[in-house]
Amino acid sequence: MSDTAGISSSVARDQFLQLLVTQMRHQNPLDPMDNTEFVAQLAQLSSLEQLENLNGKFEQVLLLQELGSGANLIGRYVTYFEPNQGLRGEGWVESIRNTPQGLQLVVNGNPVPIQSVQQVM
Image 1 (tube, rainbow, N blue to C red):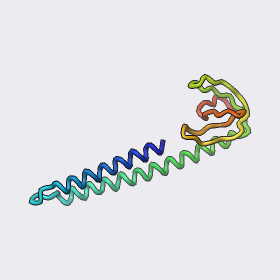
Image 2 (tube, rainbow, N blue to C red):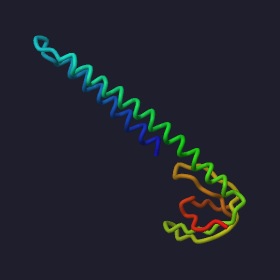
Image 3 (cartoon, helix red, strand yellow):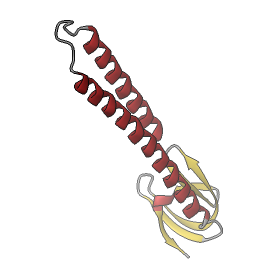
Image 4 (tube, rainbow, N blue to C red):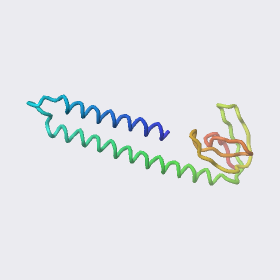
């Protein structure tokens, strides 16, 4: 999730800068861009970068929260149902792992998405 968001925001920032440079390069020298308009565009770019940084921090906090929740399940007996694969099962949570698809529990040696857990005993 975060890799794709980071790539697309980087592309958007690069496109914005290219557009700004092109706009400055092709402006009429007798009627240049208004300073306030230029400063406003730079402020928008700065705001965009700050929002991207904040979003990255929120993703880190969310991951830590998910890991903490998953760690609390280690040693607990769970039942689960994974509709995408038609898996239904139960067992002891042995460990957790973070994968590109999200947090997974290891139950009886099998990876189980944490969202598939239906009951914790």
